[in-house]
Length: 87
Image 1 (tube, one colour):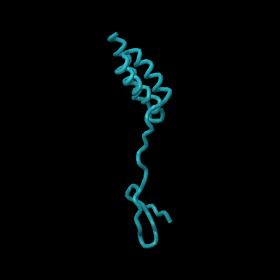
Image 2 (tube, rainbow, N blue to C red):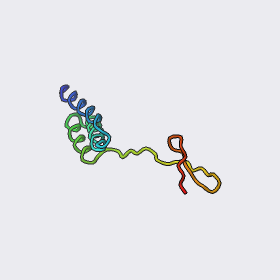
Image 3 (tube, one colour):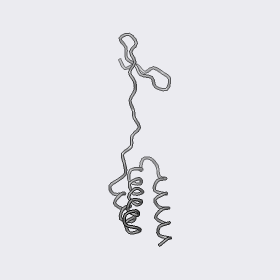
Image 4 (cartoon, rainbow, N blue to C red):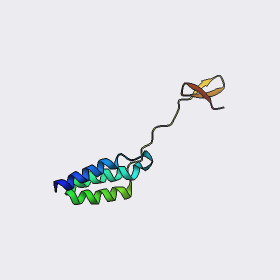
């Protein structure tokens, strides 16, 4: 039983090491495996991991907005230390 728990923990750790493009299913699998293991032990970890991979993980996006500045009648925002004019 200890070997099964170690195998599931290592699989969950490897699931988090995938590329960000596939982070949804891998993150869901890791979260499902850990929560399933806490609730129902090793069988719960397997079922939780499968369910988490099917459902997917959280959808995390970095904020992508800029503060708008005004220079007379022109509007701009700053990106990489350069002004980007909107008008």
